[in-house]
Length: 433
Image (cartoon, rainbow, N blue to C red):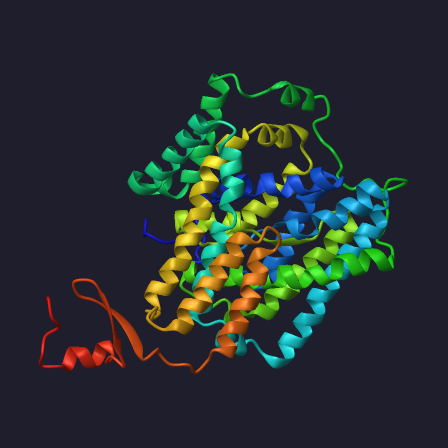
């Protein structure tokens, strides 16, 4: 088996199904957490994510290996209208408006093209943005891992060892095996409550969408729309960051082919469908991007498998209960690796692009992106991306400072020092070398 499985490759079902299940494990916790917090149905959220991912794959020509799960950006607004105001129809109307914002921007981008994105997001912006997408999520990993550090450390160790030393098929399912190993250890330690799993067998199959008195179509509520629609710009920017990450990982230009406008179309229509099903808005998931980075298996066929498995999970109670019983420490252990890999991918972008950090402009852009992306508690990645793009446009064309700091015995400042290239051509050697 080659070191990497490319986007258009299709592995046999005996391998694709476990790989799809690995993606489901990666996204499951976050996807069902959103409905738990907001008062929506976890089963509907799973169904929405599976159907939404299939819509996304179809509209992106199955060229982007991304999974769509419940978005965290809308938790506050959904909670207000579902739990506080007891008006889920208004919440779904807001979700519908989010999808429509995506579609409007899709039309604009389809008309004017996507090449300009590369001009406003060069490596000095893309690299730090990719890095903070991973690093900003690590606090979640640490929070889960801190529930039981021995189990988290064991799970992380299994994933890391398999990623480096395993051979053949085992090397591309390290996350799945690590989760199972962590689950077994937690079970031996008596940390898993199996009662909900046993109880779930009393009702094997559930119907997520209950037609009748419980079903409500999205309604037009001005307050809900104004509360949720503007947040679409936040998740659109995060989608852009994810596409940059995926492009770096898969060695392809996904923004150009199949095009970022198709990403918006797929995500937008998936969110529209979710609003009619009663699920939260969906977005591309960093957890699954981390799985790609660790396993180097980029096949979209595996994402298809994950979407189908998610739809099946939304119907079968015991399967949901079994996955829900996975301890947070186990997921914390594997996500430390997943999110960390995304962070290092951003650093690799800067190295491969040979970004010159002796230029003050580059230092400023990277520093501000890192500070905002990691420091801001809400939508830090989106704000950091916007500020980074703005700084790059404003500072464009500036040259290096004429003052460089050199090290001899101590530090001395040399006015109008020559560039490193010119120093290399000089016949005289620098002192002390």
